[in-house]
Length: 79
Image 1 (cartoon, rainbow, N blue to C red):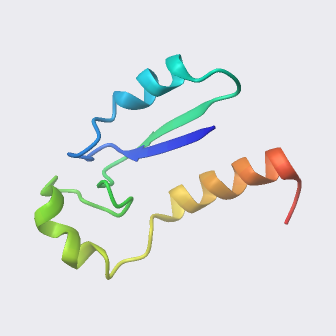
Image 2: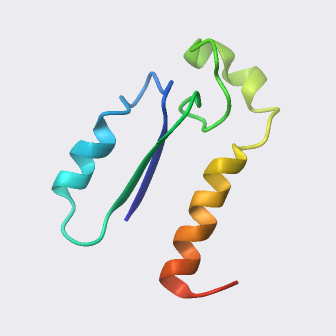
Image 3: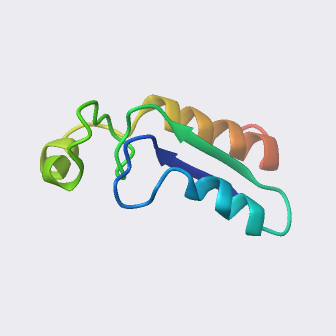
């Protein structure tokens, strides 16, 4: 299982990644990524849902995409 959340996620506390990891039976990889919101987009001022409309105009964080790509490749081989 792969769990990724943003360090500025106001909907799912970043500490929940560790809680999820403790509950999962089997392989688990968890990441809290920088100043990202719940939408996994930059939210440096931690404004949360008020900034979602603007945030959806931005791509998902490249760091998140790299984490997902690397995880998939480790589990199912190169693309």
